[in-house]
Length: 354
Image (cartoon, rainbow, N blue to C red):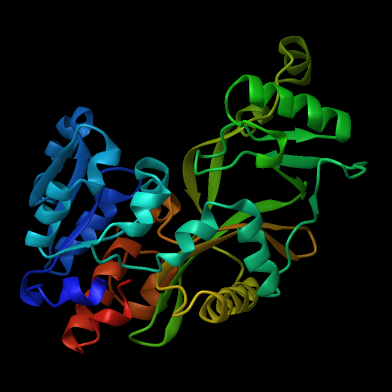
C-alpha cells in the first residue's frame, strides 16, 4: 500500500506532518532545520496556540475532532502535500488504533508497534522476549504480600495509577477506577511489582540507513502528586489523607553515570533485535525504554514507548549524548528529519517508512 502511494510522491517536496500536540513543536523545528516543509494537523480549538509558531509550520490541516484524520478529503490533502506522518505519544490515543494503523499515508517508524503499545501485556512480553530485565507481573488472583503499582491502559500520562500493599487494596483501588470510568473491568489494569529506585527514561534512535543505534538522551518524569508529596510534612499528609498519584506534568534532564551507558546501550540493542524478529522490519527511529535503577545499579525496564517521547523536548538544541554522535545540535525531532533526508539522498526512503 505505502509503495503505491510513494510512487505518486514528489520526493523533492516531502512534507513532515504530525498532530499538533505532545512533541510536535520539536518535530516541526527539526524538520525545518533539515529543509522540509511542515504540516500541523490540529483540532480547531488548539489552532490559536499553534498559529503563534507559524515560522515553524507551513500548512495547517484543521480538524473538528481528531478522528477526522482518516476522512478521505484529509487523506487526499496529505497526499497532495507529499506528507510523511511522524507519530508521537498522542497519536494513537487521539485518533484511535484503527485510524492510526490503517491510514494510507507513509508513516516514519514501525506501524506494527502501535497495536503492541496498545496492549500492556504485549509490551511486557516483547521486553521479556528481548531478555531485558522487567518487574514481576501479578494477576488479580495472585497472593500479593509486597507493594505493587497498578497501571491503567492507554497513554494517559499516568492517570489513575496507584500503589497497593496487598490484594485487598488492589481490588478496592480497581473498584474506584471502574466507578471513575478509567477502566471497564479489573482485567484492563496491569499489576506490577513496585520497584524502589530512580526512574530513568532512555531516549534511543535506531537508524536503518546508518545501521546503528544511538542514545539521544535521558530524563526523569515529574509526577503529581507523588513528587509533590515529598515536600509536605508527614502530619499534613496524615491529616489530608493524601494518596500518591502519577500524572506526568513535566520532565527533568538526566545525565547518567558513564558506567551505566554500556548496559543502557545493550538493552536498546536487544530491543531492536527482538523487534526485527517479532515485528519485521523492526523498530525504526526513536523509542524509549522506561526503567528503575536501584542502589546496586541494577536496571529493570517496566515499560517502553515505540516512538518519540515527551522527555526529548528537554533537548530541542541537542543533548550531551546527541552531540557525541553529531557534533552539532541534534534533537530527536531533527534526528527524525535527518534520517528521512539521508534516506532520500540514498534512494532508500522505503527503509524508514511503513
